[in-house]
Image (cartoon, rainbow, N blue to C red; front, side, top):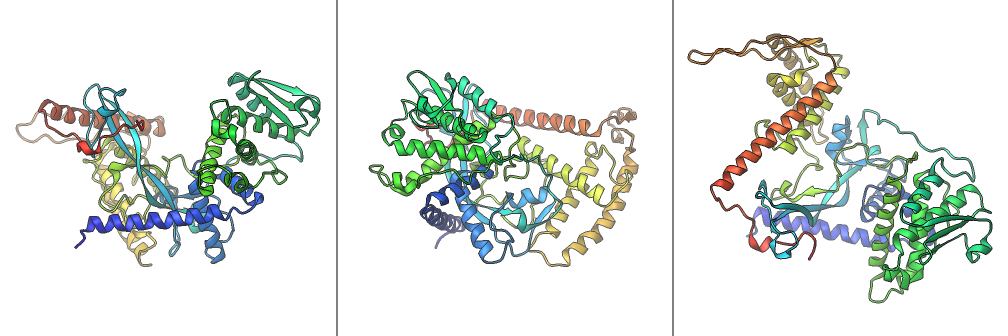
Length: 520
């Protein structure tokens, strides 16, 4: 009889097989050069995600549109379940998430990094020994879920500036930014008057003379597009890139695809870009499956385009991850229980025990609670006698607000009954009175704060005196407080594991799990 852990592993493997089939189908349906160009334009907005996940999101959103579950054929912003909650939005009841492949990373330690055999896998919560180098390595993948903003309701998302272009005009600063990058790679950029000087082409990259030439008898946008195309050659197709140089079609498709993504990320009209169908050259790469070639090229193109875009000081179309939270596609292996992590799975949240959080988790919980407290005090116009500015410095208020936050998350979970929200408001009324009591006892106010007054019991030293402290900038105080709290927790963790080392307790990972994180 299979254990629960074995059943969970089997279910996870079945989901991964299903995702692989979806991905293969999506790649095979890139049946024309136009389809490939559409996929790249789409990837330009989803540039923080892997090419495989871009295709998976695209495929599943199209299906959702055809089923009438979303109003538009293309997604805009996508995020995990709890990411949306932290942004003040809630996934709608009955809205199925889009499955993606999330990398799982493990931590490895070595006292001699140059020796592949010296690397050992760190167990959950295990600290490296003094002098050891620690690196992370992808050890697998797991299914994860994201939802498009059209599948959620709640607070509006902040909008970022978007580029606006006239026909034939290149985005401001793009020409100069690309030229600077070409120069930083050790190439001289030449603007030549006509195509006769570049063999009848729009541009030319010469690795022997280390020169890039672009003809100027084109409109501004075409010149800059060609500049991006040649920069892609510089970055991707040097003398050490044997496969791309052996199959010239690969190099040309990759370079033009990078140029298309750069243009699309700047709002340029890319409708006239001509890209030969990827399968035309993928099918002639000896010993490789065309689907694998397409996927590998797509990821190389995405990474190169991101590398270029990240170095440009230009206004670009918004990426589709709506917050600055950690990459939703990357998870630490130690975050997994028998059934995998549930950070992006629908369901009620778990209680937060602030005394047991590790330093990294402590920081994340403080930030999440602060975002919610900021929202709830504004949404319900709560006075400082209920939630004062420096609530975070008073443990009783922290615990009360944390419990209220978790209650709110559970009440507005899409799987809850409709009456759960009124239950939260009933409890919210009682919590407001308790908050007033805590605030009154602590002495904290709108414009001043004081440490909680402690009562000394018989035999204890007298409590130190407390004095009012003026509040000048609440935000700065919160940031400094969290940094100090996280540093203190980290120091406590280090001291704890140092004591373990002193006792020569063997907490090494299973020797069979040791591996070279560099892949050697």
